[in-house]
Image (tube, rainbow over all chains, first blue to last red; front, side, top):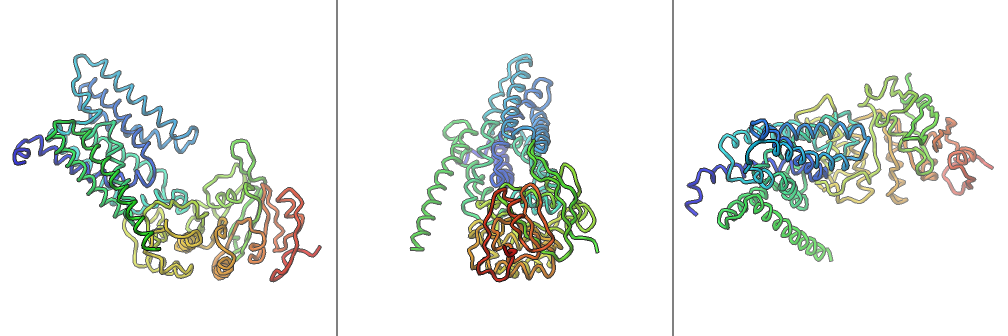
Length: 275
Length: 249
């Protein structure tokens, strides 16, 4: 076990896992209670267009991903307000458009693009120090917003219509929430990749919602579960020499199954207690 | 004195269906209006128009002489309890506290005063012992009372209730109406329900709504009103009511 920490990339990978778990636990809680897992998937896949654009124009693809995902969040908020089309239809179109745009940009880029798979499925071992710092800034921004608007986000995710009758700026708060989700998916892209982002965002919160009594508790439990899944997935991928992103999702999925079993036992013993 | 609610010639259309047609009504402060009508007759839409959640295609709505956007803090709403997400991890106390939020008080935390008002609201509906409980685990009637407490936490001048007794049995329904009558001493109440009997016994004024608003500024429910609202002959027999709400016929 000693030698694993002697690699610089492994230390960076651990930092990235910790940051990702914290943000995922907090933002994933809103994603799960507001039932917008599919929206988060749409936003993360649209980000692929930005990654392609980054390759094509020669800047850090992550900046392209931030631009595209925030644009998709804005587009979704506007279309939601206009109600001209069902939200899921728009998400589906955006999802495919983003992927297509990404691939075309990569096609247009001269030369071979070996890192493409890293963005689709993640490769935590390729996260450089500079990107850790970028992740840190994103995470700090997300935590600041959630701290500032904790009560308002709770009101909007619990009962949107009632929040409107209170005079809260519901559409703006919802847009801010989507921006936070967009930034979170970007932050997770290097860790688990675009395709697997949704799982890491939703699984820890989907487990904790069954065991908690408040949004705050749900966030804390989701962060702890995220740490468990990302770190154990990371070590397993190192020792088994398998893809880190896929391994993390595997441990998370296994955790989800186990949690369902525990929840079932808890319910059963509760019913027994009543009888 | 300005009227609590003043609605003039309101029309609401969804797509091409007319939901509210030329609705006008004025309510003085301290009124208790019951609105009955069939499902799909526009009762909830009517409430949402007052709340500013639905913008009428034409006509005007004023709350104490000003549009709802300026007087939002005066009106509170009790939605049907089924609007409640049972899986959401939130305590009864936090649900009621959320009623203290408003645009001008964004950021920060709830004050001691907020918490005292919330305690009082919970006591008024008899839910003070439930405040630590998960809101999603309550029975229908209990959820309803929590939603009323949330509406009261705003300290409104007008309170709108949408089918509040839908899940309440007859005995607790009686308690429920005596609670409303107590609230009515301090605020104007508008209640919609399809429960003709209970409504007509407990309100001060009654109206029928089925796209058109039939209102005689009294609590007498006439045959014509009900027939107009339900578009079919209705037999109204007044038997054993505490006081007569139906004209003799």
